[in-house]
Image (cartoon, rainbow, N blue to C red; front, top):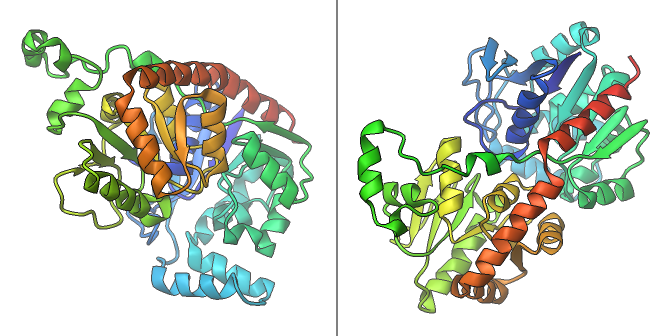
Length: 412
């Protein structure tokens, strides 16, 4: 079958959020289907500036077709307009203006989809929030699958989304928590639905994560003491990390809970805590210039895996998650979690897996972090639980069979 994925950004270096999720699914389905991605030329979701070249690309077996955005986003003006529209009576035209200001605004992508949608057996739209999904779903709802990646936030209560959620022929929810929220909030007319999520296959890769990449390092690696050949030791050496540390990975900004995380971790250090905090990903906020906060940068997939293994605890501070690949990948390599309790999805992962703790405030963060750091047996037990949870719920064969069922349900 010929399948089109429609998503706001796409690239091998985009390693978080729904875009990363979309790429993982597209690459897997490309093994048995003709897969094409329709996306914009944007790399940065703040500005939507056209950074990738327009036209065809080929990324890991997937054809990628990029279209230029008509304009960039003025984030300050957009935030002011959002403040107004979320708190005042307004019209549908106001909401469409908000959608355009939010971006990415890419008429060329929608025009292409209008002309060529019948070439595809299925159109899979990733993320409910952005214009390519809102406008694209209107074109051929009968061939359309929506992957909402949604959570409760002010934007989702706009009228344009009530209209949109009623359109697709099939829906792929990330979790039961997301499904329950959306089904209670919107009227769906989909003929088929599945709670799907995303596969996590780091378990196979984890067996030899610290094999030295250059051949001339091999003998030196063999001569190292055992503790330096342990899980994640290569990442620790490369980033000069000693002792215990908490790890966060993803967009480093206040909206992902990182500002609060640093505040809470500062309290931990003020109370004499010895562990450090390491952050990997794209930095979108200032970090304090203190020795116990380390910025590892945007890492390759291999090094990100090494970081997850090296960490004593992986912390997921975001209050808004529809799945959290960071949490699933951490569990897949056997590292325990410390999660924000304001995210019902994260709490559900922790409770069902018994692979992590969660905090609702500063005091709970401090007590949970101290408990996990002090109890190695607990960490090992949670690590085993996490691996089993991922094996049980997020195997690729299960995930792909659900997509096959959704695609098979479409009226073509």
